[in-house]
Amino acid sequence: FQPPPPYIMASEATDWPAQEALKARRDGLKARIEKLKERKKAAEAAQEAEPHYLIVLCHGLSGTANDLNYLKRAIDNLATATTPSSGEGLPGFRRVLVHGSSCNVGKTFEGVEAAGLRLAEEVLSLVETFPRLQQISFVGHSLGGLLARYAIAVLYHKEGDAERVCSLDPLYFVTTVSPHLGEPNIKHVTAVLGQTGHDIALLPRVSEPPLLFQLCTTRTFLDPLAAFKRRRLYSNVQGDTMVPFWTAAIEIGENGDHNDGARILGRFTAKATRYEIGERGCEHELMTFEQEAFTVPEDSEAASSSAASQLVALTNAVPSQLTAMAQGLNSVGWSKVAVKLRVSLWRPHTWLPLAHARLIANERKGLLSLISSLLEDGQPVMDDLAKYVLGQG
Image (tube, rainbow, N blue to C red; front, side, top):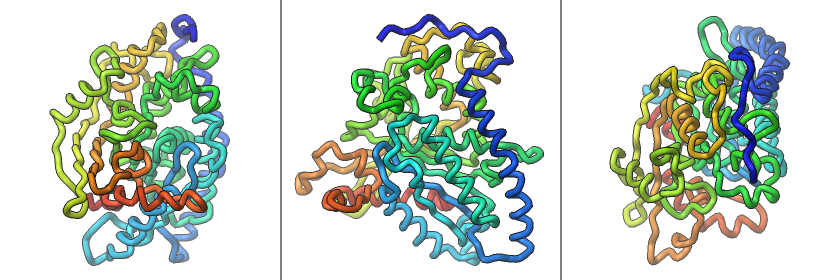
């Protein structure tokens, strides 16, 4: 792989082609979103018994809508137990619609842009079906976190001073082991992973930086993410051969180094707070750190009101890309949760590199359902996530 020369933009008013395409798609959906406002008023006047709060669950690469079924049940059960008189949660949480996205089943190799746009269309159609919806949250597993980040950028708009996603109030944005900063070390297998592999490996596009670079450093993608009331990410400390800790946790080493995993993890654990969850004898260790939002200095590579304003001559060397990406994405603020799933001598499967699926207690149908029992021990982590998106954690 031979990188192209530094990216040069002629004007600060010019966006990269990927951003221009996204904004064109956003404009194309304006009429449908405007109609949502009218339908919402009519539904409220009719006092229809419909859900108020939408939580969208997004599966990962080669995933299905069933992968996050345990989380769906956990949210449904907790929401049912939350009554208006209990004082828990936020208004409308007693009417929750949890939707497992299915639009990208069998299509996850087509790239973040194509799959993210499909997800945006699916969410918009769902909101059109339930006009009384008022609030929205997203939970994205692995690749699903990247698709959700693209989709919210398509659906983002303003109503006066209020920021909206698909005409709804954005509440929680959560990812579980998502490769937020890509994974440059998979360049040798990109042919197998299609356009999605090209995106995650941070390979450049024609005349513009990698798409993930733009997702992390430009206001087109950062503003929609910052619009959510709270953001949380979960990463695996060990046993995950799919998505390394550093990219899931948006934590890199000095000078953009991402290969010294032990040092990166050590720096994180030094600043994190530890606690345990799960049944006695099968506890998982969680390390949490609250990354406060901050303003990127104006002379920084990651500071830009458009893709061109501070990225006029950015080198596309991986270390400088990762530095700008981590700074830009961290600037919106995150609640970071690093999970150390328990390894037990008496449970041999816990020694296998299945943490990527164990974390979400992945559920599959058909023949793959035979391994679901090996992944159940991630359920306490999903219970923790369910409380979070219902305002109880």
